[in-house]
Length: 289
Image (spheres, rainbow, N blue to C red):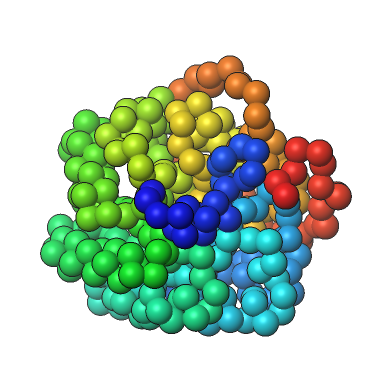
């Protein structure tokens, strides 16, 4: 990541001591409608101030509302630039919905966009990423690309091969950071990391709500593999105890000593439903400032 201004902005998404981040995306409402944990500002207010969170990703309207309520203090703010409703005929073809300049006027430290490659929209996705990177460079704003491969693959090898190609394509076009789904066998996370240029930060997604232990194990693999952190939404704000889940993730992602390497394990969705949120204790000594 080049440029002093860009580096300063990006540092707001990382823990001061760990150099890693826990970014919480809350852009779900545009895509899938009302979501448990994001129904109202009062729900968001219940967890957004936790010291483990380093950044937030949201659409422009939500950023404006959260900022007006004073809920974004001390957080890296990333405005999401594109999207499409799940109701649409082609929901994987995300369209530009706002500009980098508009994001900057809202106080954004970075911008993001989501690229779902379904085999029919490759040109659309690459053109949009190229345009966003060019636009963001004029303002020294970092760009995060949420990268998802929607193609059905014959086996794990083919899937990883496609993922590596897509990652490299995004790096070639100048994205500063990637958000990726972890492979089912997380022992292969380091293999994915090897295919990314050194200047590209990598965050791994939580995806659908899973057991807390699975997400904690993923967090350990993230740290061991040298990735930048987690970008998790539902696996944070849909927990029965958001405070407890964030505090445990904070202990893994923002810790300083090296941890023992964890064994590989498959990540599978768990049937856990969200519930009431709790207040968290005062920040411990290891909390991100």
